[in-house]
Length: 147
Image (cartoon, one colour):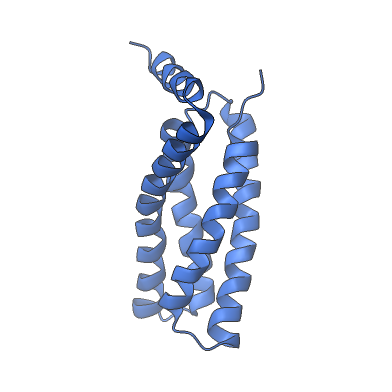
């Protein structure tokens, strides 16, 4: 079976359910993908800080970018079952992620330098805040296809 047909079928099934049930299922899938992307992000962060002795804010930003590659790939196919062409989706994803990246850098600087929190605690708080921004932006704008 053509993978595109399967993806569109999954997307249609999600839209045919009650909107809140579909949203909850989509958010759950987003969280699962987010966990995989978080491993890439945090793994990079810890490696760069502990082994590379890089500043935690810079390491967090690099880790965020690594997690972003994982996130785009898995969310496009599994969370949002989007058939938006890559040429349209990639730049939208990059813009949403870029704004999330700026938010990540600002929050990490505020929490580590301004409030003196340990970098991992600051990263956990930052991740929680940026999670809702990224889900909303990607759901509403990046992967949504208006028909």
